[in-house]
Length: 168
Image (cartoon, rainbow, N blue to C red; front, top):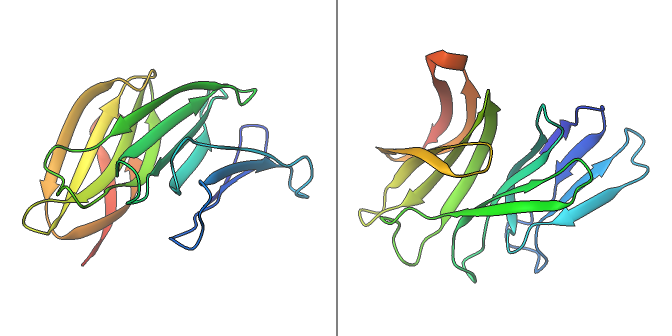
């Protein structure tokens, strides 16, 4: 994925989809791809998104491979890219051998909303939505049992969200 930071630099992620043994990388560069800097996020191999919020913090959302704990990771760095915190998410109904997959994350006012999905014991994908405060602490969770593969979320402000998903 490719986005612009608040100062119009490119922010993009490395998604290996199983062909790399390195952790996923979040990179930041100017529009000529100069002054390229980056960081890896602990054991996150697959990044769903990375963005810079209105407070100039860098946030990335990804998930671990099946070789690790199979969790989603939400990581925050300050405007100097210094590590602030990482939060881990794994729904308790996730089948033991399956992943909690990071799909998308957004900031809306003073909260972050994280879109994930997982396979439960019925082998259907279950959509997993988590709302956090600005410190990444969980405020509420919601699941939607359906055989969908979510890939995006958009905030409607105080009126809710629109989620995009494909039917499996």
